[in-house]
Image (cartoon, rainbow, N blue to C red; front, side, top):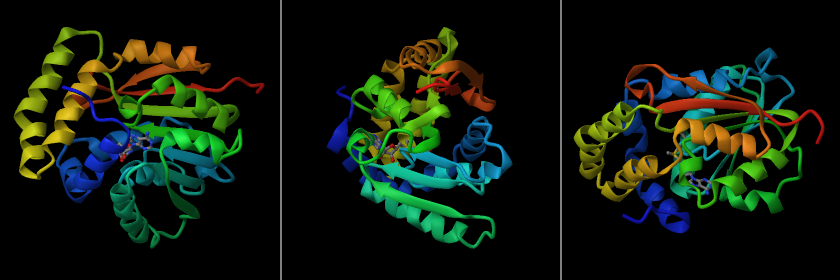
Length: 245
Ligand SMILES: C[S@@+](CC[C@H](N)C(=O)[O-])C[C@H]1O[C@@H](n2cnc3c(N)ncnc32)[C@H](O)[C@@H]1O
């Protein structure tokens, strides 16, 4: 199968946006795991004075996790799918009722277009939840992320990346065949969830992705596990840019 990329992927997410929040809410641990990864950024003082980029923010599930981990940060969510961002705006309206929320904005753009739109060092931290497996050139996007971060800036990537054991791959494909893809067919989003299964099967394993981060210039890279059925399947990767630009 050819993986969905670029406009074809954005169209699939536009179409899938209506059912997306319901599907992920039914996935045990989805929101809790994002919150755990967002906390792993280690942003001090509730993120006061910090600018945080949520790259591939989708319907705002990861943005909500960042708001919970750093309610005082200035958060910018970027996504290539207008349909997903419409849902994110709804999330923000509901969250705006919360008193400590300072500033969140959403930008409709592919990650790859940010180089021309944002100055180097625009962010203190970047979070990428389930994004990098979807882009055409993960190394190029990581290079861009490094440039958008300040020196000693923090990165957390939350991604389906299979661990070293063959059992991880078996569990992933069993979950996809019995739960994820049937659910995707029911909501009319068969293409998107076939892409999900195959993109995980063909993307980096967790050790490979950690190596990719180091090669892209990130320091102190650590791979952290997540609980539940996602153990060995979903990981948080944390790292920092160098002290000097
Ligand atoms: C699986 S969703 C994850 C959304 C959210 N981060 C979360 O954790 O629920 C992946 C998102 O990445 C977006 N995306 C994929 N490729 C992108 C790109 N090149 N630039 C910006 N967004 C992209 C999709 O539109 C989609 O909303």
